[in-house]
Image (cartoon, rainbow, N blue to C red):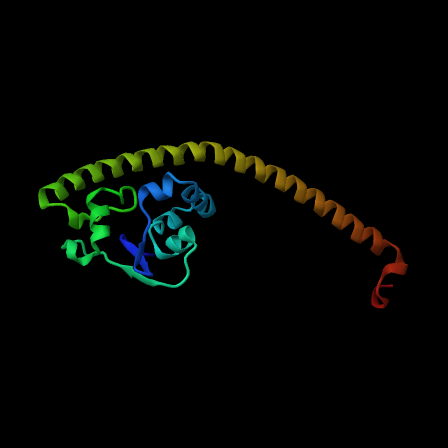
Length: 172
């Protein structure tokens, strides 16, 4: 999994993906369709593979930095994109926040996560309300079908065995 921020340097140009390029362009929407609904694939949105796909790029030098302690760790163009909020929705590099802001972020994050867990649990319970009766019905139908299969199988075997011409020599 690539880090936020990833980029490719080629021919003195930087290639990287921003929120707008992914969600507000035809090419970005094509890429999202290509990924499908996988939450794991969405984690790689700002990565080198996505960059290559989006820009139809071959070659170049892949770079990535996840040390946000100093802007000088990044090319000036990417510093501008970070400061401009162009990576919103692609990650949460907490190294950009002062301690007090990180604490506030953690409170909001924790609260949102707890709400997510509640909703997830309710959804699971609703699913189980549907799933359990459906599974019980499936089991009944399956059992009935299996019993019918056994009757046919047993009957066919013993009907054939009843005719002495069908028996192996030892049982003739």
